Length: 369
Image 1 (spheres, rainbow, N blue to C red):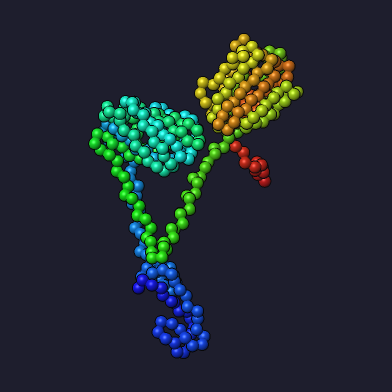
Image 2: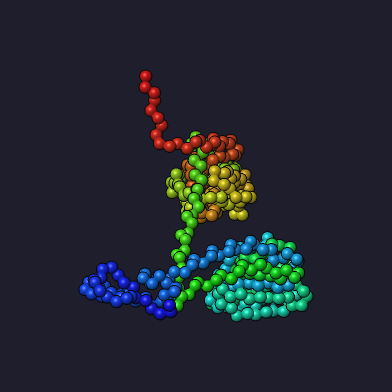
């Protein structure tokens, strides 16, 4: 052992010496450069015993098992992530940290501590002498990504755990009243064989498929009987009710006076104004698709133009309608993401009926007799 070994192939002729091939029809021997004790020589493949699986990661650990910590360890991970906002007590401001950084942390009890770290390196801050870090600890991270300021609540009145990420630093360990974190055992390096050969690492498992998504269907527009909002006269209504239908649709151009822009979807905040009430009125809560919003004119009747803005996670939609009764305005008209659902005023009031069920395809034929 300890040298090289020649491996024969198929074929060969008569004669030949020990350990080789001879005669006519022999094959060219293969030479394996690895130690014969550590490899399958004839295939030149390292044959180590498979390493044991790594232990599972430790459960999330409370960094305050015995009161306020006297020291905290962090790993510099870069970026700008907040996985634990501590009910609004934790804050992160500034850009996303990247590359080597200088981190200066100042506990509430004083005593700034600076460290120069690379991505993946750990650093530890300790109390300035009062026994614990105090109510909060502020860290300033200076890197190629700019300056990032992080505030962590360390009084233990809010959740603080190993693994929590605040901006570009992640809690990795603690000392609290004599207790410290449970660190996972170190991962053994891969086995090495004579000649420098190492076992190839297995490919990583494929990522799990994304969870299925479901987008609730937009409720159908309310079933409206087209009715003149001005009741065939010049009596302007004093209030108009809109149904939030999402999207961006214009079914009545009002001879060119109606205007829409943008697109809205999902829960939204709706605000409307007119010429006599520039401060307008906004919904007190998010309006769900299919929900209603009523705008009442402060002067007792709508002005010449009424404008509304719908702000949603899916975008912002705006619309302006002619509301002086000199242009057609009917129940059921859709302007952008809003449908005229009802009205009220001196001339009377009316509104659409409830939304009907969705219809799929043409109606069935009549029965045959």
